[in-house]
Length: 260
Image 1 (cartoon, rainbow, N blue to C red):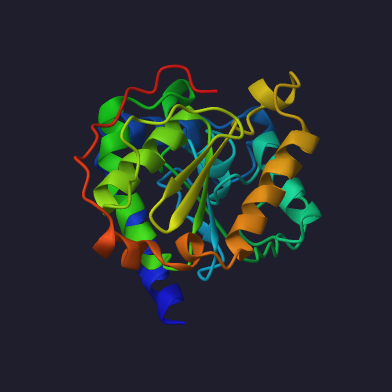
Image 2: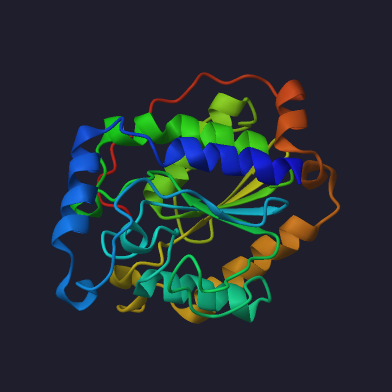
């Protein structure tokens, strides 16, 4: 219950964030002009908080809200095809109460999973700038501090992967000498955390067959198994592990480039 209150307080602060003028202007412009098919709806048009089970052992990290998805509905990966793909997979695994996520009041419940994004505002062209990624970093820090049971991080795409690695270094739980490269199925052992990489669930990947339901199901099943594993590295919380792990130099956020 205390953890839920902490995350709710974090959400209340996050939705008022105005650090990035370009993103604020874009979110508001999209909310004002709307897509014709959603002309009758009131858009959220502000930063989108994380969503899920505060006691989650699995933390899924995406890129940023979709302009007419989460920026419209106010819930991460909700209201677009990317969300349909993601939540359908979680539902098949028994971690989501339903297969489709359409709005904040649709009754969706997650079990043992928390979902958020590296950037909390929808960026033009779905491409955040490096300074915008950096500006959002401390929201990840605060979220991580609250998600004390999260021992498996699943990064959806290259930007989320880099954000997770940067977070690990800031938390002092990085164990790598050379920065691990992103790939679908990549796995990095941090102090107290397993980091897994997955292609992003965007239509660019799912409609072309680069990421299939079978591929994503297999990766989530592996993540779920790791989250339930009683091994020492997994059972030690990131907060506890940070006290004993060697400190690494903070990595500077990388430019987004073209993320898988």
